[in-house]
Length: 92
Image 1 (spheres, rainbow, N blue to C red):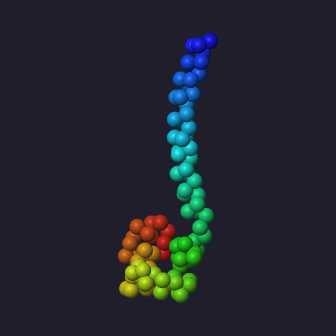
Image 2: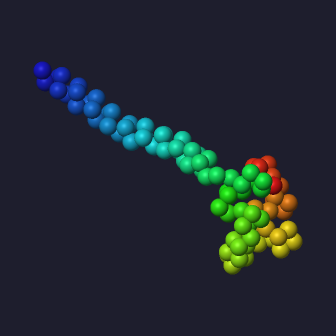
Image 3: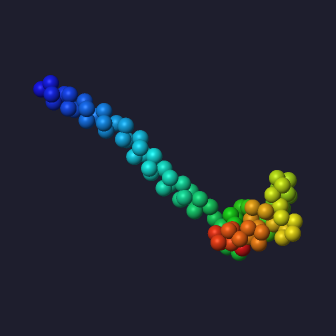
């Protein structure tokens, strides 16, 4: 009987630390889902609520942050001409 208690104690001690690790594995899988849910501007490929070409009033916000490409008249963070890697992500 005593050995059965010891065995159950050892098994429970080994199993408990593994539970948080299993929970952490599921969290990264949920993060991309949240990003995919944000609607994109179909014409320009950026997040719809941040599209300065569809909503020119937003330009002042990006200019105030210092995130503006004056040459192409769009936020630097959305300028697929200056940053070709954005074009590969679907930004036009």
